[in-house]
Image (tube, rainbow, N blue to C red; front, side):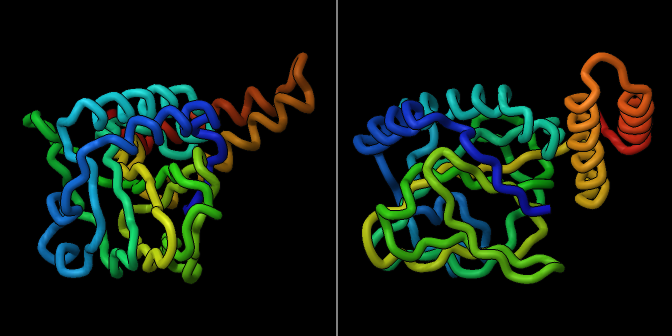
Amino acid sequence: MLLAIPDVLSAAQVLQARQILDSAPWVDGKVTAGHQSAQVKDNQQLREGSAEWQQVGEFILTALGQNAMFISAALPLRVFPPLFNKYTGGQSFGTHVDNAIRQVPGTAHRIRTDLSATLFLAQPEEYDGGELVVEDTYGVHSVKLPAGHMVLYPSTSLHQVRPVTRGARIASFFWIQSMVRDDGERTLLFDLDTTIQRVTREAPTSSASAVQLTGIYHNLMRRWADT
C-alpha cells in the first residue's frame, strides 16, 4: 500500500523546521547508505546527533503519535528516529531498496524496516524535479507532495529520487517496524478500520454493524500482530 498522509505537520511547524534546518550542519548523504545504495546516492544529509537533528526529529515523532491515519495505516511498533536530506544542483538518488534492518543510532536496538516514509518539508514550487518514484506490483508511482504531507510505502519497494534541477528539495525520511509485518494484512486492517469509522459516523448512537466489525478487526489483530 502506498498512502499519502496530509498535514502531518502544520504550516507553522514546517516553517519552524525549515528555520532550524537552514542553519544546520549538512554532510554527505552516503554516511547512512548501504553498499549498493551508496553507488547511486548523491545528496546531503543532516548530521545525526546534532541539536537540530534532535529538535526537529522530536516534534515529528510527536506529530506522528497524534496522527490517526498514520497509526491506522502503519500500526507502528517502532519508529526509526527521523533523518533529513537535501537535494540541490542536479543531485539524485538512483533506484535502490532500503536495508531490511536498521541500527538505531546510539543504541543497541535494531528495527525491521516494514515501511518507509518521506515527509516533505519544501513546497513543490520551490524546486524542479525531485519526485520520489516508487515501483510496486501495480506500477510506477511518482510522488511530490506539499510541505507537511507524507508518503508511506512498503520498504520492499524499489524507489528513487529524480534529479533536482532547480532549488532545494528538503525532506525527512525514516522507517517503521509495524506490529503487522505483512503489507497485504496491514492494508486489509487499514481498509477495515476506515470502514468502521465511516459506519460509526453514519450511525453515531448505536450500530450493531460497527460493533461486529470492530470485533473482527481486533480478532485479526490478535492473529497477525507482533508486540
